[in-house]
View 1 (cartoon, rainbow, N blue to C red):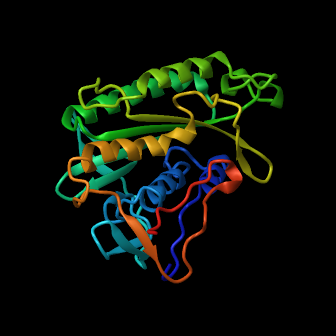
View 2: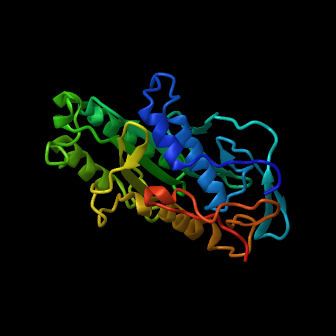
View 3: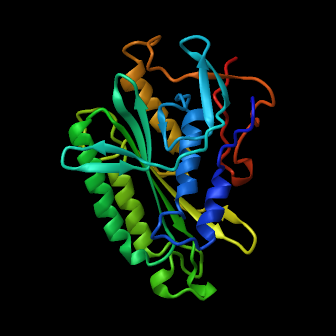
Length: 281
């Protein structure tokens, strides 16, 4: 790739969550937002000009379906995009804004590292945010991603801040939250209830002394909210709603032609959830 442009990896985002960055400023979760935004561009094929927060990429049209991707010397922006819902404005963490269509896809990405009794509040917020946006934009493809920290009772963590027991099994509060997330996921058509998300992902991470890792024993692989399904479901539903009526129209997801140093063959391989850039053949 021309110049220097780097996508924030999931690993870097998890490491920041483990660094005990103050949560009040939202600085702890912003690298995860940047990771999702960069993945929307590189893997999803959405033009970097469409994606907020802005990442250090720029594009140049070759054909309608193929664009040249290059580094953008302008600094990245961590600003969210404000979207008017049916009841109030909502700052969505990651938004794809397609010219001529408006807000088409978005991700709300949250994390909880302690005080898991407050997950009830997260449920209420997630439900309200989803309903609010779908009231105004029934076709909006909305994803909810929640990262849960692995805190074990036997590791000296108080029961209020624990998420797993001594046998590495999720505590009842985590199990209940998982079931709620399953119930809030799976919206497929624009006539489905607006209180449900198109895709929900639950990811458990564990903080080590020198690195962060994914705890892959929960949720189970067959879970509808398993992280491995999250991004692909968003892409598939976007294609169904915004590309299918006009397969060669301007709204289709793009493929990238990259010159110079190119891009890595795969990202986040060390975390068991690798993904690749959407390169033109």
